Image: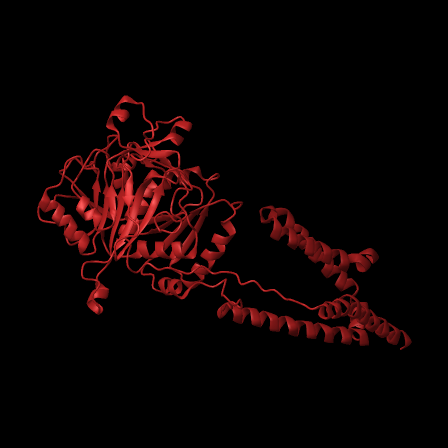
Length: 518
């Protein structure tokens, strides 16, 4: 009994605390941890009962009263802390004290998030060890802080191959944004790309993409090597409406964009006039023209300052990689880094039998031209059909076009009559044109080769881009440099390194000496 009286309180408190800690750490071992805590509680209670006289005497002493006051102060401070945390939880606020608001969303993004009409799911296929993981996670936390209609999932592609297959993800870092049946994907995980993706999937506006037919174009429903069923399937998955277009009554008013995919027969004059009228009214046009064909759009292209040369691009770099020199490729550094189509685009693309593009400089008035994709310097545009058919192809200076060769270009042109002033002119949209010197690159056989499919999809996405999409200026860090004179350096060094430590030590010694004399 004496051992229980002397040691019961300490051992019991220790066992009870240890049991509760273990129960919280390994709850699945509750059958062992809870008996330990219960046994400790029994020992503690027995020790208190057996040693009640000494405990009572201690509680009535001066030391106990002082200890009680300290406990009261401590409980008061804890109560204040708990109350503050409770109020902070009920009234959550964040403050960004940086000058450039580096950790805050833009006003445009906040407006989009607060106006989300439906639930949106964001799924990121990234690993925790990836360089951009934490940055994307922090950004998405800011998004979910602003709205309850946004849910976020992070999927490790290595641990969840089934999800990768279900979403058909081919690139690490892909972010899939879903809203109902609408879906879009981004690989650039910045605020601008993410907010614009939210606008796209929540937009109720139908985006209709028409593909012309009747001139030997590649078939949008064709599953053969030269068909476009792969492109059509991805477009429909991204909530586009894909339709064939027969130019007998002009371009439908609901057409968001028109695609002319590799015709091998010329268009009728009336059909060319319909396409030109559509483009002049601010229409969006994707023209992919193969070598040896002349669909009849030379005059229309000249208004943009563009032309498709009558040649075939030869690329020696393709031979270095074991390919055919008649299948030119654009290296990862051959794209324009500022245009939305090829911004952050760093994939190789190949073009089986392509013609070079002539983009005039300067561009016609009202036209903005961009060379999207160019081959290396080890390429040229071969104009001799005899050399091409014989296989003995050489660069003929002054006749052939020396590389780099432009294979894709984008143009933006003011709509006809937009030069007039007033609200009516401002309401007229700018026409857009994307021109390729090849159509085979987007066909089923080459759609998944390098970045071919992505480049075709990016081009259509830029053509049908909604007017409400935003542009967010990236935040730049402002360097803060303090320039100190020699006298200031001397003052700060000795005040921080010498005076402050010596002063603190002197105060400590003085307090110790005073207490020792009391």
